[in-house]
Length: 351
Ligand SMILES: Nc1ncnc2c1ncn2[C@@H]1O[C@H](COP(=O)(O)OP(=O)(O)OP(=O)(O)O)[C@@H](O)[C@H]1O
Ligand SMILES: [Mg+2]
Image (tube, rainbow, N blue to C red):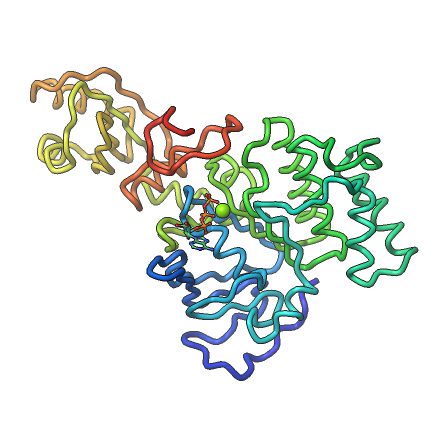
């Protein structure tokens, strides 16, 4: 489905030559707004047919990255190629080959779903027979029923998201960008979007870059995940690789008092554990053999006069990877449909 990659033209490449088969390739891609560096030298190589999840908290630089890759925002440093074309020097070639459902969908409330899809089809130069066929297929896929004939003003948030997804697909793009496709959706709508994303990838081989603040979403959908924080990619790999990088088992100790990382390391020096982090009253330890470690950890802490409120054993999550890489919890991982949270506030502090 992807076009043949063409040699880099004109512009000096700061680093490596283009990777054959890459559907999306960014090299030291950066964007500043005045003094603020929103995206700070991101390198990405996403293969054709991959679902790649860019996971990060509010303000991490997800939308800015996507907007540059979609040719909607000029990079202030580095370069990127999407579907074989440079996003700056060959922007119109890129646009023909990509679809994008962005965070702020600009849907005309007076238009009906069907009207929107037909208009998109015509804008992309489809014949009226092709438009009919395509609108039929997409209407079936998003399954909005009679609502397709009603004004978009009457749609729920989830319906709008799914219509926006369909609109991004009218011209059958090679590469699809979805910026937080499920933020704010209820669990049922979220599951439908996940199904649609999987279907597009499995049946059409579409390359999909999606951004998310939800650990579960990255874990469930993405073949590979890039964790972004403060504009930089801090870790990348399959969800399994990322979790393995934290350790086999995690022991989580909740304490009555704070314990800093250095103290914890000193207290547990004789045990076969690594202190991943101490955040608030939570101490996170990784170990190869959790079941055998949990008892000695309790004993060592008790011997030091530290009161344990809770001691649990579990396998790592992507949040643990995020914690290890950034020293913070991503803390937006619960799929509760909450809209806006700042990245690092304690639970319940979102507005
Ligand atoms: N047009 C702009 N002008 C100035 N600053 C901007 C602009 N767009 C983004 N920023 C800043 O760049 C940083 C990254 O923003 P971005 O929208 O890429 O984050 P995000 O990861 O998409 O966050 P969210 O999860 O909230 O959508 C933020 O600090 C934001 O305030
Ligand atoms: Mg965003």
